[in-house]
Length: 484
Image (cartoon, rainbow, N blue to C red; front, side, top):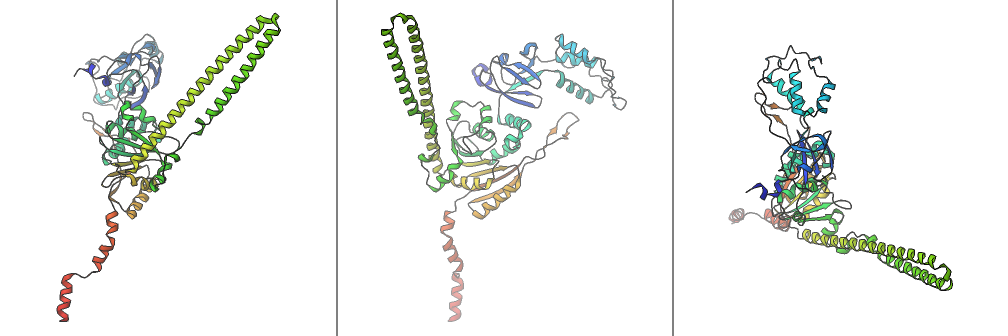
């Protein structure tokens, strides 16, 4: 299939894209004539529109992006290397080019690769360094002088890496490998009916929606006035994905479990309904005053014929004022109707979500919240069908230990596991593969398990107790023989 037949592969205006430079990411909205600042560089994304995702661009003068051409391999001169770095002294005198010389090269329009070549040629110690040291030197200079960015399509891996590096507090320090384990343990797949409770800026919700591919249904439980989906919007999902997304407030879960929930108890916004009468009454009063003003003006015209021109001007002004007020009232009424329509749509959606939850046949539960997990999990497990997985994430293990104990006491779950994720990156290079010196201190803790039904066990408890107390038939037979 040709690339032109795959519009999702090409960058379009209005898309959510991710800028990448080395290991640094930033999510942006692709718009024309919009200035973007990334890694101390400013540019416009106009020229990127129409190119394929994954294209690398150079930032030229004026902030325009130009696709980077493939550079030829390093010449044999730069590959001349020494065998030992012990005699090299870093005294700051090995580089002949000064800061002013480098600035002059930039002013002439010389690009990053050419500046790096100039630095290599004017370095007195470069050829004496080992091959490994030369590669390290070139990599360091590229990072400083090459204005190169890559535009990639957002995904769970990229966005989770970006958030964990830039703003880990917003996602409760949820590391990308931990998120991957949560998706696996939760058995996230297309066609599922999932319940999600998260306060990770919508990152977990977006990861679940991406894996489900728009098939099935996702119910997001949220605290406060409404759900937060900042990270979800960065995925750039089509509208069809959001048709299968439902939301429900945590404040109404208890009433739903107890059976006292009704649509009348849903959160309403009376300020949208009250002003209707006030606006209508106000408009009637204003119209009456305007009519009185026009009547007074008409009477003065009959009495004072000498001031006809002046009164004509006042009538024109009054008419203009009337038209302005009427248009303003019309706009306010339209805004109120629009708010009422949105409120009714929200209420209808909440009723649909409540009906889905009341079926109590969800295929899984994912919890990744800054709140204590025990009350959340115990209340939300009521809506999960038997033999379904649940996963709870927490940055600390103590809350999950308490949750583990409560679940063991209550019953209804099996295969309970509390695990800690561990991640270490490796550098993989010829003759230089080894673990990196810097690694993440912790990726949080995961509590997982599978729900089971407990109704049969409770109903048969008395019969099981009776069977235990009853003597076996073989023992009864022996007793009868002894008595005889």
